[in-house]
Length: 555
View 1 (spheres, rainbow, N blue to C red):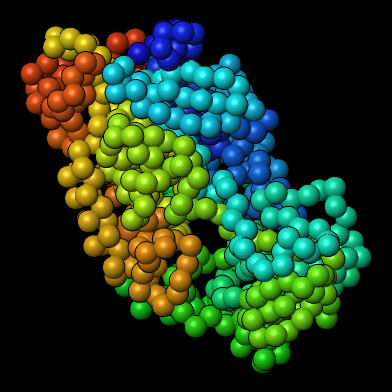
View 2 (cartoon, one colour; view 1 turned 120 degrees about the horizontal axis):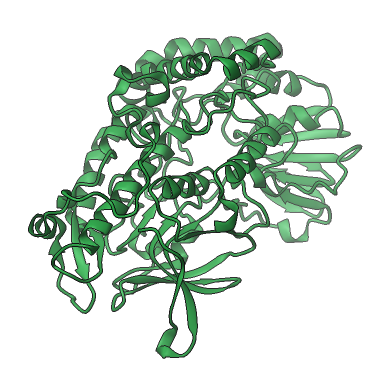
């Protein structure tokens, strides 16, 4: 599975294209994590295709004022790349982006990363059992594609009547224009999500007047952020068990909270009381407080963390319009209740294409249909990773792998475990006595069974029963975003590939054979992975035993 990049004949035998064992798309946490894991598995024949000019993913793209993580820093990092020097308990965007650059350097990933290489189309070649990849920098082929583009990569801007004629400045929070000076401007902030509640207090002191257009108020809890002291950082460097204990405690507390979100939403009343108290401390106006009080159960939408949001809204130069933006007439924004506001600039904090990821339009599978077409009735993937009809393709942060209360890095590492075992199984089948290169395709019955189980568990969760409409739900009202369980459960579910859920495709054969039968015939599993380095125990076994493991293992 190691080796170096080779070449393969181009379409029609006219041209030569680079060929790699694995192509990873994206260089955020998912893509860089996949690259590290590939190297740990002894696979060096891979590339990371990145459309931008640097690594970092969403932490490169989101550089707006006040941008920071709402997960504690020591939990929002790879278990195999701990950072004892996080500057704050909830670190800001610059520190997180620097951490990802550090990971790329420390693990020797730079030679594998292709910057300014946007993927335009990926097509499955059923005859050669490989993916044909068209990029902005040329074409290549790959045996396996790992899509790590992430759900928060493509901004969503609503179609507002009159927006095209607005004479002022317009940009999305994830495409912040740092050359535009907001000082002294009349600014409209559209949306009240995680980005907006950080932007509002950051820019309110600078602008002449800030108007926040709100459709639905969020639940906001205090954010107990502070600087991590030099003594703490010294302890974490010199005594790694202190860092591990801190991470384990953060992980464990969040695991204990999961049942309230997934099984017993009525137990969230105490949390609602704390959120209301957070509001009452700063919002003294009863009318404004009424506009800011949600009518749905806390947790139904993403719970936001901020100790500065409500004080900013209480400022005399900040207005709240609680009926949403309806249309734009020249430089005047008209709300749903008829309120008119003249502004110089509009900032959209309106989220991302989460349940309709644009990359799906660019992936063409074995049956000639795009992934977007296959998912037109809702995204679904076996164990959040593989889709029926798309052999040797998997996604990191796939359908129903999102979290409502913990660190996505835990879910990413679980999916990396699954990816690693998927590649091991492919190597063993490729090298079997039956001969010939193979591909693994998720069985439709297995994908459907997994999705039915997930959706059945989803019904009683706060995300489905809490009385709100959120970005967790797709156009059909199905929750295709969140995982309805603990991170420990998900890690157990993705520890290894169950070959009974897959079928084998062979070069020159259209017939699909159950993978478990091929593995049995070939004696798969008896031989070690050729050329593999010893896997890192924290990366390959982390968390499978739930709370019984060490802090580094489980978190």
